[in-house]
Amino acid sequence: MIVAGNSPLATTNAVGFVNLETYPSTCQPLPNYPLTAYGLGGIFYDGSPLVCGGYTPSPSNTINDICYKLISGSWVSGYHLFQAIANFGGMAMFQVASEISTH
Image (tube, rainbow, N blue to C red; front, side, top):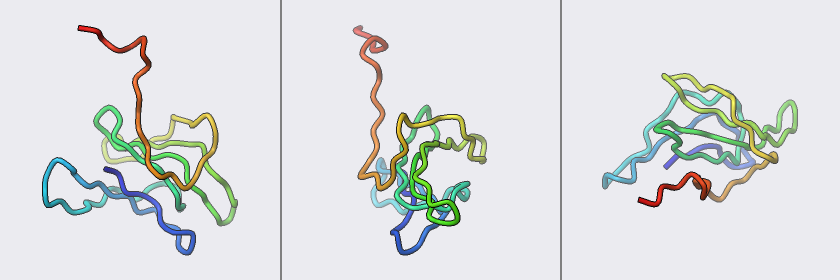
């Protein structure tokens, strides 16, 4: 599970990872996220953390549509949401039905 963002009272660029396959598990910090924001959403995609969206209040007052993937210890942009969004309740990745193997 990816933990990112903070409350509207305090933005942050801190991102962490909780391994839900081990119990008990603690939040492990990841490198600082490139945006200082809150309301981000995150998942593991293709073996790496992918964090999207969020609200950047200062100086731009922007709801973001960009996603960053952690590759070799650095956050790399290149993914975009179809619409800017903040305050995720959660995030899930679905495979397109035509790509699902039936065997």
